[in-house]
Image (tube, rainbow, N blue to C red; front, top):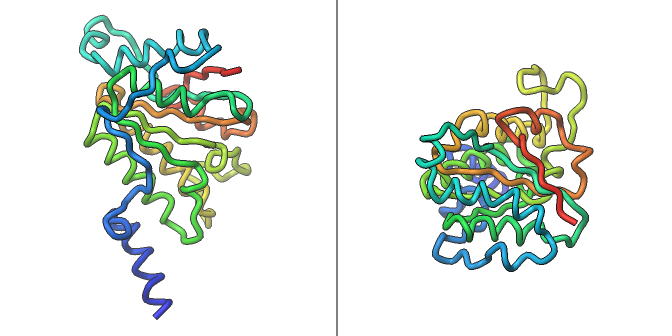
Length: 211
């Protein structure tokens, strides 16, 4: 019986249906529920200034497109524990009137191969369907740590679950445009351990430090 249940769980995640109708595992806060604002984040004036452009873009993307402004797909928030990275991400969603999807990087590193990658795909699908949206990956270093040489997205051979999940995140970020109304925000205490692939242009190409 246990084997049957395990097979069901794996197939459910891989098919995108999730367990009992829960697919990505992310916590969702709708635009109507997003009450946090930049004014709620104390002592982070520089970070607020840098993020206000993102909020304005999500509120009126057509205005930015008309003047050819390039808005990043991903923003990395970094700083010591307790500095308000999660609150800042929620405030960004609140200012933009966007849905907020929150998940921990550790949630993508599962025991069963393929489950984490399926969660990534489901998360981005849900965000697109409910755009404008912020996808917030807390402690992104749990899934996005620097990989060993030869473990890139096109490498052959066996990969652990973390690598598969990271590759899925990279593929999703490469596959959408900010004009779809989705911005990915990652948070970490250790930006120095992140895989360089995450920081390439078109991914997390803007970093904002918090104190």
